[in-house]
Image 1 (cartoon, rainbow, N blue to C red):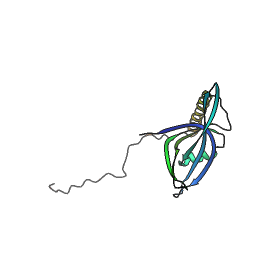
Image 2: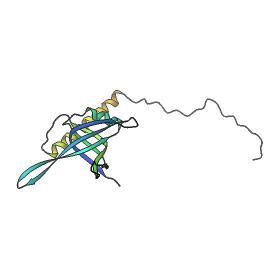
Image 3: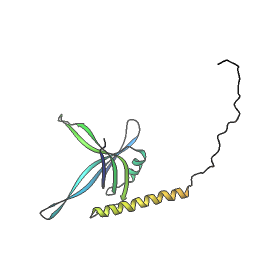
Image 4: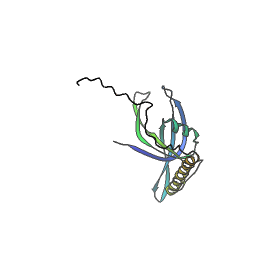
Amino acid sequence: MLAELTLIGYVGSKEFKIAEDGRKYAMIKMATDFFSKKDNKTEEFTMWHTVFINDRYMVERAELLEKGDLIYTRGSLKYSLHNCNDGTRTITPYQSCDKLRLIKKGKAHLESDQQVLELMKEAEAKRLKEIEDRKKARPLFDAPAQEESYPFEPEVIDDELPF
């Protein structure tokens, strides 16, 4: 079974911690907006999401994010169970992130989903170009294939045993 969650929204707050095993992880509070029409009036609502990042390289990328940056995240939907002070238990959903992309740096208020899609395409094209440029600047070593050879010829021993 799969419960995958894709979010496109704005960075709110960030928190970095170190786990008991010494690995660093990040918790990002992320805001997404949605609109509702009532009586010919459009109302904007903001929902807050928690994004959990424990991949070393994505944590490093998350450190570069600033409040208001527009980001894309993808990951699985998970739940944590908390015991409250009053004896009750609460279930909190969060995203365990396996993909993080910066769409636009800085505070960008976008009017439509189409603008977001255009910015995502531009960001992905820029990322792919940077990858290609790195490949050109640092070509991979292409050694000719060689036959596997041994430093000596194995000795054949005939012990004249009947089996």
